[in-house]
Amino acid sequence: MQITRLGKVRRSRPRTVSRDLDRLGVGARLGLVASLARPGGNATGINFLTAEVAAKRLDLLRELVPVARRVAVLVNPANATSTESTLKDVVAAAASIGVATQAFATFAAERPDALLVAGDAFFSSRRVQLVHLATRAGIPAIYSQREFTDVGGMMSYGPNLADVFRQVGAYVGRILKGAKPADLPVVQSSRFELVINAEAARNLGLAVPPTLLAAADEVIE
Image (cartoon, rainbow, N blue to C red):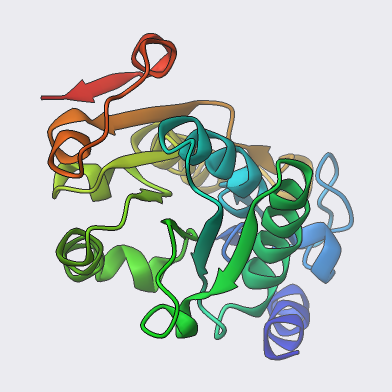
């Protein structure tokens, strides 16, 4: 509700606003823009599609850890829209492949076979701690950004942030030159990358399947 009210306030202000609509939960659904193709008003932006590929992350995690029967899902309840989307997609995908999901809060009482960390700005800022936690517990985990694998995380799949931020910069430049946000369609992330930390996988006793190695955009040895 707070996010929805924020969006309405933003739209009523006279200045133009370019927002990261993924962090606001896809602007069209929340009323921040009229539609993705024709935003209208004073808002446009970039949709990272971070939550929308959560089911794909589960598929990749299961491919690397085929014995996993129970996967813990870490979401940020303060990010209500992203949490709802992530859990809906992951639970449905898990049921289709015979995997049970559990809340991260039960991690200590009931050890999961693997961990899926949802995309979230707070988690990104705590990536070293999260990777350390998973490594110390010996739990295979998949994350939303390559920055997690850079600090020792086993695997990540998500939008290429450098590419997304270039798109953000291009839009800001166009608006500063006089373009109207109402005329700029909301851009959807189109470039996703799979990064595998092979050393982290080996330390967990896992062999990365050749199919995943071939599909990976980068393999960290």
